[in-house]
Image 1 (cartoon, rainbow, N blue to C red):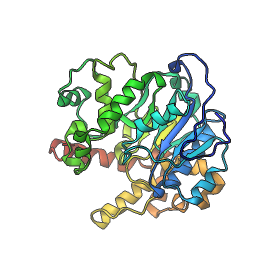
Image 2 (image 1 turned 180 degrees about the vertical axis):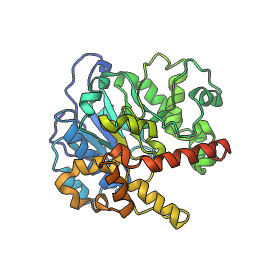
Image 3 (image 1 turned 30 degrees about the vertical axis):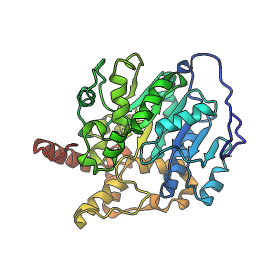
Image 4 (image 1 turned 180 degrees about the horizontal axis):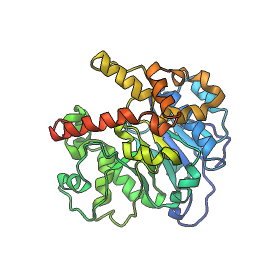
Length: 364
């Protein structure tokens, strides 16, 4: 890949230099993400800094940001590895842009793109603990256990499709590694996301959507369970062990926190719930708001992000927010990111389980 191409416009194409071997046996040849909201630029910066620091001298980083601000474009020019692509993706909205991203990168000459959501941060053990996994044919992450999703088989049958294999968990779309060998899968995924049935469902409130049309990750999961694509090996990163899926305080479950307390957190943290770089959420009572603020302050994402930005922390003022109670909990935990939020995780798990029993915390 010619790293001198820092910004792509219409019509530009770059061909990567890869071996003639099977793409599934290669390391990823590009890391990619797409974002059309300027409000997320702080998160993208931290994502890039973590890749540069903990995934050194490896593939280039391709960011598709049609609405990138001039300041962000200038910031990306610090890195030879980063290409800022301002060309909008076809019919992209919300999370529904991954297959278009894969196809664009194939057109640019890449063979094995590695999609990571820009609200992720890589930790120092990333290559040590996950390096060999990047040789997988199809690498994905698990949807959090606390997420009220039906099993993959239920979702497939809701489409009226035959279940050709059982996958252990719905895929979480935040991390997906596919190769050019999976072009048919990606084309089928894109075609469904473009269908009238799916697009109509996406216009409804999320709790009102049919469970099998909830988001792009359910569609990918279902396709991989069908006879047409059941031959593709699927390698899951384990929640809590390989990746922390921060979907609320109990997104990082108490058991996983205790297991990681000595060994350190998982090599990837995904800030799925409240976004600390956005305006503070104004949800419910003042007590509820303080609870959300405390959870966000104690998120392992912030611990990892502070380590990544280092001396540049003044550029991210939200990383410096501290509360008295948050300080007490961090101090009691010895500033351990796995233990600092443990008390509220225990409470949150109990509340969620109670809601499940009362059938008031489900999708569909």
